[in-house]
Image (cartoon, rainbow, N blue to C red; front, side, top):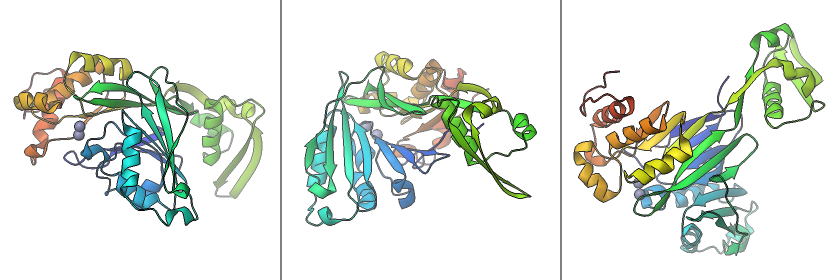
Length: 346
Ligand SMILES: [Zn+2]
Ligand SMILES: [Zn+2]
């Protein structure tokens, strides 16, 4: 049983923050933050359906131009989410260029921008290459239970944390995961294949028993095909278990209200990506810069009950000392009182 998502940081821990979440079974991906993304290949950028921006400090938003340049004339639509002023900022970025020929490009690009309001709800605007990226107002939208984006198999939720400015912390939630009974599959004489993904999807999205599934598979005797109904194949499913949850938390201050906000949003998260910008010996500096220390990140991970943690967004002042930041975060996360630089006594 594998997860729907394959998440990885765009850069190393000292580079601009960004999380690329690939889908294992589909040619698509999500991106969290839009800083330096030049390490992503054009085909990886072409797979993006949605981009979620935490806030628009340069290290989180300067990659907008690069993304636009790669997808313009090739991709039809991209949805982008951000916080206050996001629609104006997208508009200003687009107005910085001269667009006298793009309306003739064969593939029209529509940037569907969604601005999340601090008090809930949000505003939408569309920018089409056919109209030289002139801003067109979309309908405002509501938000309940922190849901920013919702699909049949997963959702993305977000809440504002305080980074001196409002900044969105996001959590990606796979709704459920299907466990297949391998022995029953073998007893049936069929092997796994794309049809099994189709069956899982049908089960997760509540398809009726009569829905047909084309069971295609290949073995040493060649290719086989038959049509079966979802109801006939349901016994191959062993269980439906909760899906994977991945938190993406950057940039924020270490305050009780931020920790509470994160607890509401992503308690018991399976995998947490969290900024760990400074060593705790520099926490006064961290406070001035509105960032966490590695120890504070570890304490938050512990409060959340995170099962796995990836620290990132290290300050360049610690170049060559990433082990100290990682050890400090792990010590606080695991509850040992190891000093920074020492390995936690797990
Ligand atoms: Zn920032
Ligand atoms: Zn930052």
